[in-house]
Amino acid sequence: MLRILRRPGVPAGLVLAGSLLLYGLTAVRSPGWLDAAKNPDIVFTSRKVTFGKEKTSAEVVGDFTLHGVTKEITVTVSWKPVPQEAAEKAGFPKGEWLRFTTEFDVKLSEYGVKVPDMAVAKVSDTWKVRMSVFAGTAKPAEKK
Image 1 (cartoon, rainbow, N blue to C red):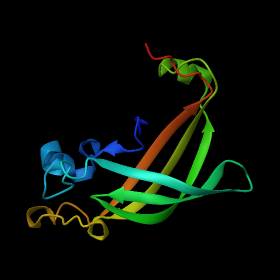
Image 2: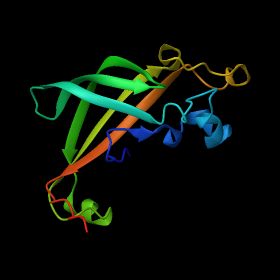
Image 3: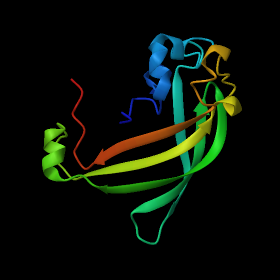
Image 4: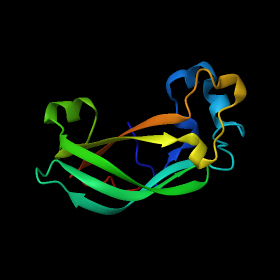
């Protein structure tokens, strides 16, 4: 699940994929991989949305930033309502909720990320990115 932060990104250190679990979070964050100190966030910023005929999906054009490199990509986003019982179990505030999902491939080398030689046999240059975002009608809690 992608948690929306105050800024529109995900900390690079939260990215875990397939066999990268073998190398540990520290390795993924290191300068040889995602270089989280210099590039702390992975960001997708939407710019254009074209809704499908069924009104359950849309083509979204936006900018995807990884490792300090930004490229325009187009992704298909689908959504469906979250049943109220599931929303309550997840601890969501009262209201109507939707779950938006997408997945797309990212070729690391196109973003300046080189898979270290010791990992080439286990780690692909292409990663599958899967995102889920929840949106609801609940009024945000007031800051104290």
